[in-house]
Every structure is written in structure tokens, then in C-alpha cells.
Image 1: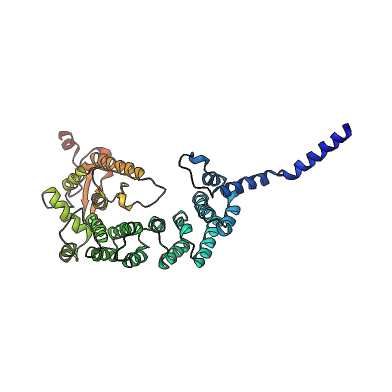
Image 2: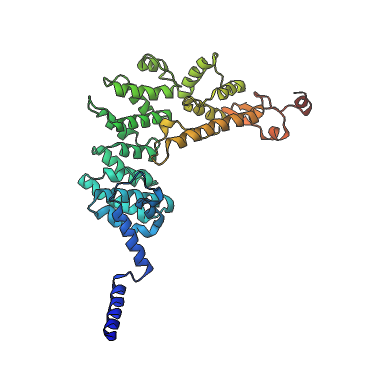
Length: 378
């Protein structure tokens, strides 16, 4: 009897060794694959983010890429493939691992052939690039009619204005009775492109204001209003006929002059000071910051909430950053106003560093520092 139990003990130990992973690497692979299978479950709102399978896979980093590369292309579960694309993108953001990006590109190319690329391409913005391969795939999908809010958001997040033409074509093809959510995102993107100097985007928005689709006309007018400094004319066509030969710089001077109650002179230091003083958190200050940053040759980090598309950046973060930008420019102006002078060749104000170091105010027109005695008298 003792011998019999002894033999059973040896047999159990041998079987246990056979079913257990024999190396740490194998145990890790099993855990990674279990997490990939768990991607099939919808993310639970009450689950702590660190416990979610996608977040745990991101922590595995490079070690998870081989199995994710298989899942994104071959897993029969669509949810797993799409969430695997998100995880690969987050790993690529942190590691710039080329294998992660290549796996994503290969999977999207296969999915485009079968018309199932939409869910994968909604994560395209995670694969920032220099060669344009991912953006090219995104534009191919848009041209083929694969469109969703996530797809347009990805295009808007990963480009400044390179997606202008594809998105104009999509909006132009909208059915007369339809105004989907993605169209609002596209119009916002075209507004940003217009504010960044794309004349074709501006003229497209002008055409939209005369559309027989009220939602489209209203959204396009809102973007043009921000472009022109928050003006709301009776007719954008009439407004444009009087200003088509001008520039945004000139349009904003006109608008700000009305707000200040006098002709704004961008070479007058005190006028810029009045613009800085008028900055408020109650409105979108993109026009003022666009103007002031060019007049001062400095950036202060303000971004219109309508220009922020990244789904991984919560709106509250944009609001807080903009509050910081307003506080920064006002503080900077108080500290440096007396040492700024207009430089005609640069067509902007220049900070006289040496005068600031000595505490000597400068003439805002000539840049000549005051003498020590005159500074003391002030």
C-alpha cells in the first residue's frame, strides 16, 4: 500500500510538471494571451483603469507585440481585433517599436480589402509617422466611404490640414436630409484649416453657409465667425465680397478696432496691451492669441477647444491649459511691457533683453533705453 501511494505521488508530480509552464517566458505568454482573450469583454465603467486588460497589455509593452500582431489580423472576434489595434498604438507611442506599427499597417491593408477597416483605423492617430503610410490608408478608407466619427477624429488628430481635401469631398457628398455626427467634426477640422491659412477650406465653408441644409450652414458659419474674430454678419457671402482680397490679420484688426472703440494699430504697444487686458476665460480667445502671438513673435500655448480633436485628451485638460495660457501671457506682459519695441524689419515687437536686465524702459518706437536717471524719475 505504501509503495502504491508513493507511485501515485510520483505520477502526479510528473503530470503536474507536464501541464505547468516550464519557463517564465511561457508563463508570460500565457498571461498575455489570456489578456488578449479578455479584450472581447466590453470595458466596464466601474472597473479601475489599471485592471482593464488593454491597460495591462500596454504595460507588457514589447513582450505583448507578437501575440497582438497575430490577434489584430487573425482573431475571429472583431472587438478583439479593434482593441488590439488600440493597444498596439499605445505601445508604439511609448516605444516607437517598428514591429508594432508594421503589424497595424498589415492588418489595415487586409481589412481594407474586405471593407472591415473602420474599427482599426479609428486608432490611426496613435501611429504618428513621417512617411505617410498610415495617413494614406486612412484617406483610402474615407474615399471608399468608410466613415465614422472615430475615423474623422483620427484624421483630424494626426494632421493639421493634410486631410482637408478628403473631408471636403465627404461633406460635399452628404445626403440632403442627413447630418451625421462625423460631419460636425469634419466642419470643425475645415475651420481649423481655414484659420491656419487654407484658402480652399475657407471658400468651402463660405459655400456651406448658403446650403439648404440648416445644420451645415450653421456649423460652417460658426467656424467662419471664429476665423474673423467672432463677428456674425447677416450674410457671409456679402462679408466675403468686401474682404476677399484681405488676410486674416487685416480682418482681425477690423474686428478688434470695433471692440476697442478705435482703430487698432498693431505697431502701438499700448494697443496690444489693451488686447492682452481684454483676454477672458468666458469666450474662445483663439483670434486674440493668433494675433498677439504673431505681433509678439512668441507662443503661449492657447488652443481653441474646437481645434482639439485628440480623444485621449479630455476637454477639461484643454480648458485648464487655456486658463494657464491666459495667465501666462498676462504675467509675461506685465513683466516685459516696458522693454518691448516695434521692429519694422521683423514686423513685430522685440524684447530688449539688455534693457530689461538693467531695468531701463525702452522707447516703444525706437527701442532706445531710457537713461538711469530718467528711469529713476519714473
